[in-house]
Amino acid sequence: MSGCYQLPGLFLTALCHAIVIYYVAEHRYSKKNFVLYSCIYILSFVSMGSYGYAAGGKTGFFLYLGIVASLFLYSCIASKDGFPKKCFLFITYFCLFTILDNVLKLMVKLFLQQISEVAGYYVAIVLRSMVLLPISAMYRKYAAEILRSLTVSGKRWWNLALIALLFYLSQAAVTVLNARDFMSNVYLLLTFAAISFLMCAVYGVVFSNISYMKKEAEAAFVRQNAEYLSNRLSVLQYAEEANRRLRHDMRHHMAAIAEYAKTGDTSAILSYIEEYGTEISEAAVKRYAENQTVNSILSAYAGKAEGSGAFFSVRCRVPKELNIREIDLIALLGNLLENALHGCQESGKEKQCIEIHIRLKNNRLVIVCNNTCSDKLKLSGSLPAGKSIGISSILSVCQKHDGNLDYRIENNLCSARAVLNLSACQ
Image (tube, rainbow, N blue to C red; front, side):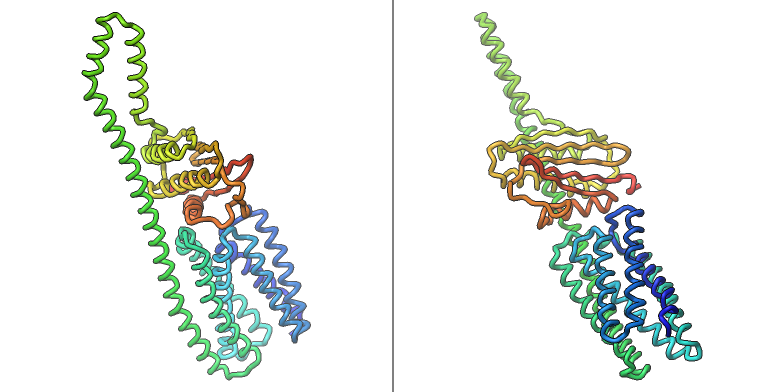
């Protein structure tokens, strides 16, 4: 088959890859930039593929490896997911691609023997694309949110990626047997069916594991919720106890003021009233926000910051009601403040501060948290290097609400900016 016949097929295959990556990946760039990178990828795919078909032999094999590498690089560039998760999704997709490729080529050989080689080549490509694209759309609609909400370590993603790689190698072996005609079509189909069945069984376990990890992440959020609400209760109980003590002692204070008044000691009366006013102010519960959940978290961490010797500053402009689940708000704001507090403590600096700015504008919740940080803190992209589970939780909430998270380090301050699109929840 001449190389010119294969060019449209290579273009359709590369275009299918680009569309699948668009559905599967968490977009790092705008649509305009994504289209630009896709065009570059498609051009490189068609060029290497056509030359590989023409050259054949070892050259064609190495060009095939180059095509796989370019697709992997393209998927990494297009997606903002963590690298282990990118590997898992890429290998899983390529494994699915190989399955369909094997099945359709075998079906063409067995059931469409009367058509030409060129026609069989395009029938397999068109049918493969017709199956892959709906599967990708279904993943985007039903499964992407589950994977996005997971706050798991990279090690678990690597374990999942290794499972996907083992099955891809098995499928690749079937592809080689199919290309070299080492087995009859019937035995090849039976071998492929056995591998596919085993893969489906193992992937059932894999996705059960993913479902378990999601429940584990939700349980972590619930534990955080309980901890912050417990802190809130402690703060409120302390304030209530202090206020009750002041009310109980009121008659004693009045008696003391009356004695000063009898002796005409005006300065003593003023001094006593000033001291009493200070005590009342310290016992009062400070209100940072109209929203009860936000106020509770800020109150709890204001107490923690005061206890650790860090200056705590708040500017908050949010309404009483926010269109976000309380568990997500607690996970986001609580982890931001917890990380800020740890950053201050690890900095070892004499002057420590935490500044939190919260505002709602055009249905977008913007939270900026600045804190004193260690000189050793480094960023990897827009996130701290070796990000913790807490940062993963924050990132998960931001992605869930069609938002973003980025960190900056400047003048010994670490600044975290989280943006959530609350209209996406409506």
